Image (cartoon, rainbow, N blue to C red; front, top):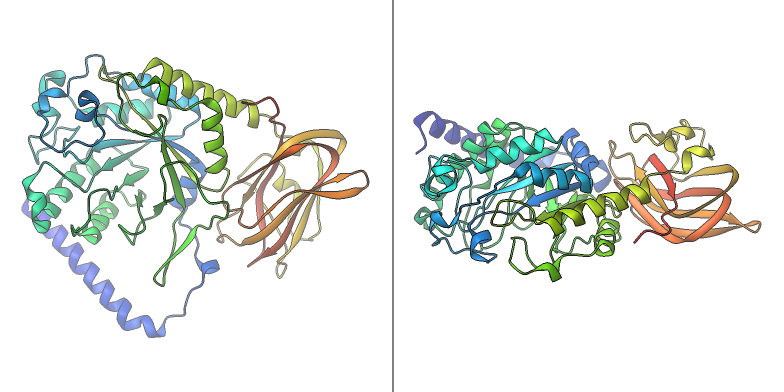
Length: 464
C-alpha cells in the first residue's frame, strides 16, 4: 500500500500539473509561436543519442510457458531458472557493442521480477532463490559491472491485478511500483512504456511523469506518440528495426512540438521477444543484423535489439555467439576511419575544418553566422578506397541541415556518391567502392548555421 506521505506527494504533483496547465492556457496568447528549428534537445537526450545501441531483455513466466503474451493466470511457481547468470548475458551484450540495457521488470501478465510490496504476484511467490530473489537487482548489478547503463520496462497493461479495472486504483498501484523501482536500483537511463493492450484504459500519465522526474530527473521516457504526449523518445512505428530514410527529431503532435528522437526496436529472433524452444531457425543472420544497423543507427535513430534468456536463466549459446559476431563485424567495418589522414578545408571562414575529421565527436566545425550552405573538402596525399561515409550533425542547436551531397573527384570531374535530406545524429551512406584523392561534403541547405561533428570514411568491403 502507499503510505500517507506518498499520497500527499502525488496529490501535490497533480495539483502542480493542473496549475501549470492553467498557466500555459492563460499565457498562450502572449507566447511566441515555435517552429521546428527552435526546438533543441536536453543534455540527457544528447547523451542518450550518443549511446546509439541498446538491448532490451525479455524474461519471465512466458519464458517457461513457450508464449509471448501471458494472460496473468500462470502460477508464480513456473518461474524457476536453475542457472540464472545475468553476467553471462552482459558479456555477450557488451561484445555486440551495445552501450545500455533495458530490462522488462513487468510484462503484460503482471508478474513482477522484483520483490514488490504491492502484490504477491512476483518472484517472492516463486521457487527462484526460495522466494528471496530479486531479478531486477541482479540484472542492474551485472549491467553496471560490465559498463552498461541500465533502464527499466514496466508494462502499464496488467492482465493479472484486479485493480486494473479501476483506473484510479490502478494508478496508485502503478505509482507505488514505480516508486520501488525508481528508488532501489540506481540511476536509470530509460523508462520504457509499452502501449500494447491499453486501448480504452485511461492512465494518469502526468502523475507517472512527475513521479519519475522527482526520483530520476535525467531518465528518458520511451513511449508511442499516441500513448504519451510528453515522452522523450518515440517508437519508430515498426518492430523491424527500420527507420525512414528522412528522419527528423522534432515531432509535431497537434501543434505540440517536442524533441523526440526515434528508437528502432527489433528482436534478435524474427517474430518474437521471449525465448522459445526449438527456434534456431528464427535467429537473425549476421547480414540481417548489419542491415538493421544501417537502417536504424545509420538513419539517425537508436537501435534497440531484443534478447531473451532461456529457462535456465542464460542466453542460448548460439544467441550469444551471434551477438559477438555482430560486434566483431561492426568493429571491422568501422574500425579504421580514413578521414583523419586527409587535409581538410572548408568553403566557410567559420571554425576549424579539422574538428570535423579528427575522429572525435566531442569537437565540431560550424559555418560562420549567416551561412546556410557550406562545403567541407578532404584531400589525401595518396588515393584511398572507401564504400561508405558517416556524417554526424552537431545537434546542440537543434537539427538544422535540410539537404546534403557527398562527392568524389573522379577522372577530373566530381561524381555524386550520395545525397539526402536529414543528417541528424548520424547518417551512414553506402555506395560502390570508390578510389580517389579528393572527397567533399556539401551542405546544400540548412535552417541555420550547419555544424558537423564528424565526417568519416570507411572501407567495409568484404563485410557480411
